Amino acid sequence: MQSKTKEFKKELPRHLDNDIMRRNIAKATWLSMQKREKVVTEIDDWEARREEAHLIKKDIVANLFDYLDQFEARAKQQGIVVHRAADAAEANKIAEQIARDHDVKSIVKSKSMLTEEIDFNKHMIGKGFEVIETDLGEYILQLADEPPSHLTGPAVHMSRVEIAKVFHEQLGIDYSEDPEHLTITARNLLRDKFLEADMGVTGANFAIIENGGVAVVENEGNARMCMTLPRIHVAIIGIERMIPRVEDLGLFLPLLCRSATGQKLTSFISMIDGPRKPNEYDGPESVHYILVDNGRSGFLEDEHMKEALHCIRCGACYNTCPVYQNIGGHAYGWVYQGPIGAVITPQLLGLEAAGSLPFASSLCGSCSEVCPVKIPLHHLLLYQRNRVVKAGLAPSMEKTAMNQFVRVGKSPKTMGRLGKAGRFFQRLLGKKAYVPGWSKSREFPEIAENSFRKWWRDNKNDED
Image (cartoon, rainbow, N blue to C red; front, side, top):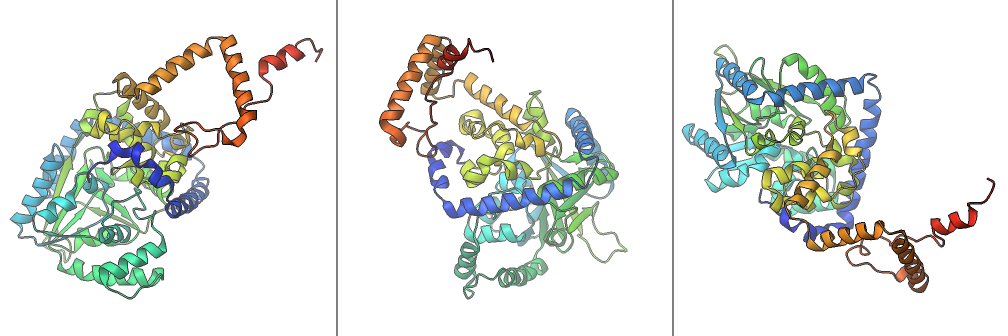
């Protein structure tokens, strides 16, 4: 997916003015957080589980390449072909070669943010392969030629009317806003694609070191069909997605599902640990893993940024973030959005390309509170801001303004004079007060009629 992060500030007003999108996002995120709160409070030791998951992910990241070697060795023992890709181009080249080696013509795939990150669809379609998204939300976006706007609900920004229009225009069906009718239409079309496909592509929520298997979590059954119906299954896996043992799924699955969708568990949890055995009737003939770095190893060089690799892609930080709720996912300009996106995108794309994103936060800390693996997201946002400033990428006017603020803040007399001037202009202009870059989206704060210093002078001798 081509990055538009450099245009973040320029494009922001357009997203803020999109009232339909903002209502859709607000409703979806509010419902998700309400459901999450209900199912989380059912678990008495929720905080202890978060801490345990945090420590497991910390160990994985600290010993990442040793664990990768173990995972690869055990996967190969199961008859799985394992490839390693240093970057997006290599990952796509490997996938293309697998398809050519097996005479693949059509590919069905389940929702995978990593495939969005490496622009898998664009590459494979450009090489002459048919690629069909089978997650309903992703299928809608493929028809609409739009990128996802959320980790778990890719089309959460779209209204029923917008979806009905896409189906009518792209599929040639009668216009209908009935969700059941639209779902059945998509199901019937995708069922034929499943049966025709030569290759199925999935991501992996968890890669299990113990047995070299992967676990995929979903609600529609499409990922399971991508894993089992086509002759070839390719799992494209971020190198950080590992957990030690199968039994650790008992810890991570409730954390993921309750945080992501407010469910105790999703409808389908599929595991695959190799191709079809001679005595089995279904499953793929060949299984391939593509283990993708694409900048992840760079996180290991920074003690702070290491913690971002703990992420299990639940999207809870999106749902609770007041900034995401008001600007939506497309405003961020790339695959990863919300607080985690504002942290990792500057690392993956570079500070110059995405340095504005860490500043798109109120630093309220709600993202850190809901993160199921205890990533201190608000601290990492501050850390990334600091890196941007140290790199000399902050606007020069902002630096000048902050230096002047420091000077003024050190002088009580100057502060007092500015307060008097502010109260005068407030009485003179009232609500017409305008501050460039501020007043379009905010109300100017009201200045108190009397300063604290005056109140102190008038009341310091009171016996109370």
